[in-house]
Structure formats: structure tokens, C-alpha cells
Amino acid sequence: MTRATLAATPPPSWTPDQPIVRLADVHKSFGSFEVLKGISFNVRKGEVVCIIGPSGSGKSTLIRCVNALVPVSAGSIQVEGIDVTDPRLDKLALRRKVGMVFQQYNLFPHKTALQNVMMAPIHVLGQDRREVEARARILLAKVRLAGKEDAYPGELSGGQQQRVAIARSLAMRPDVMLFDEVTAALDPETVKEVLVTIRELAEEGMTCMLVTHEMNFARDVADHIYFTDRGVIVEHGPPATFFASAQDERTRRFLSQVL
Ligand SMILES: Nc1ncnc2c1ncn2[C@@H]1O[C@H](COP(=O)(O)OP(=O)(O)O)[C@@H](O)[C@H]1O
Ligand SMILES: [Mg+2]
Image (cartoon, rainbow, N blue to C red; front, side, top):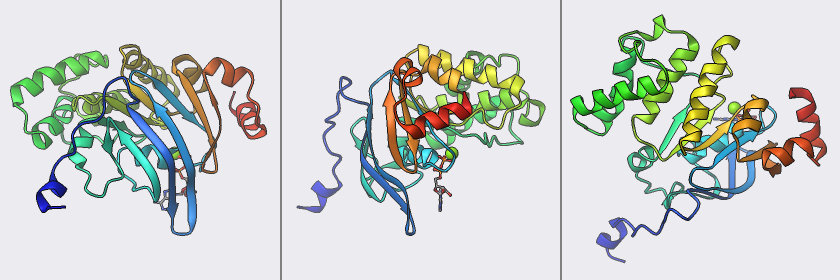
């Protein structure tokens, strides 16, 4: 193969009727410790998938593999036909497709809410400042923070900061959003406003993969639930089936502790 063909972008083989995220036999080890032991599932466009399971079962690792924050040890992950596990992966191309929100929102403390939302499109994508600002204002209104544009993170509640973080992620216009226990560090009274924001996104058709301990929310918003334990998917199904008739002893034990 010539150098030119090696460097060429493969023709886009993905079409919207195919799964937007494909995980095939994903393994991940840290040293000799295998955290993910063969995870396979697909996420279709517009689908909301919740990943639940005990602490340490590999949920965060899995979700971080999807946007290449953690390299897999074996198996493959594709997002809209982009091979996330390809060592030649164009990470910027992936960042434009996959947004991620973490438990720690990590906003820039010296930047206002508006400036936080504007940063990546301007500095990473080089987009026009005025257009970015107009869109950032719309996004802040969408996460119900109209009027807080000029507030600094320290002036906002945890739930408000987390919604800024969601708007910041949406500013890259992703096709898939990953949420990793985004309400776990919040005061109880601000959890709901963040869940409402995520639900609205889901209802608008955003494809979402979320790790959550909020079982009522998962039941309410998910199209499909995956229960992980020690690096494998023990059981999965649509919420109605999953919560009503979990079969595996590990799932039942977990649900009895959290419900
Ligand atoms: N960077 C890392 N290096 C070593 N071990 C890690 C690393 N990240 C996670 N682990 C380990 O992998 C296991 C799964 O972690 P994690 O994916 O965070 O689980 P969960 O999100 O389900 O609580 C844990 O035992 C954790 O200590
Ligand atoms: Mg985790």
C-alpha cells in the first residue's frame, strides 16, 4: 500500500439506519487487572441507554473507552463508522461527534458561564465568535440558565454548574452524549433540574449513553438498560422488563440495595 492510501480517510460506510455506537467484545486491562471482559452492544440513533451496576464494575471505564479517553485492550468500538480503537484515530473528529459530561464538571473558574460554553467551538474548532456566542446563549437558555450567562462558576449551585457543563458539551454539536454519574456529587435539591435537562435532550432525540444510580430516572428515560458487574454485562433489557423481572442473582441483589 502506498503512503497516500494509508493516510487517506476511508470512505464513510456508516448510514443513519445503522447503530450509531457499536461495541464489539471490548476488553480493557489496567496492568494484569481486567476491568472489561468482553462488552458488546449497539446503540441506535435517538436511543437512550443506561448502564447501571455496582461501584468498580467498569462503567466509567466503558464509557471513557467510547470517546477514546481510555484505549481498549481488545475488541472494537465504532461511532458513526469512526473506528475509535484505530491508533490513527482523528480525536478531533471524534470530539465533534461525542460529547461527555462527568461527575466533576470542571468548569474554568475564571470564565463566565457563557465563556465556558463558548471556549471549545472557538479555540478547538475555530468557529466565528459571534455565531458561537449566539448559539451559546441559546444553549444556556435550553438548560434553563437564561440570565446566568455572566455568572462565574463559583456563583452557581452544583446543579447549575453541571447544566453549564452540559451546554458546554452541546456547543460542539455532538451526535451522541455520554453522561457518567453526572448527578452523583450534587446536593439532592439540584439533582432534579439536571435530570430534567437530560430528559429533555433525550426527548428531542439525542442519542445518550448514561451511567446513573438514579434508578427511577433510568426507568423513566431509558430505552434499554445494561447491568454490569465485574466487567461483564450480566443482564439487559427494556426498563419495564428489567426492573420487573431481573433474573440474575447479582442484578436482583443490586436492585434490592438501590431501589
Ligand atoms: N486508570 C486506572 N488505572 C488502574 N485501575 C483503574 C483505572 N481506572 C479504573 N480502574 C479500576 O477499574 C475498576 C473499574 O473502575 P470504574 O470503571 O471506575 O468502575 P465504575 O465506574 O463502575 O465504578 C476499578 O477497580 C478501578 O479501580
Ligand atoms: Mg464510575
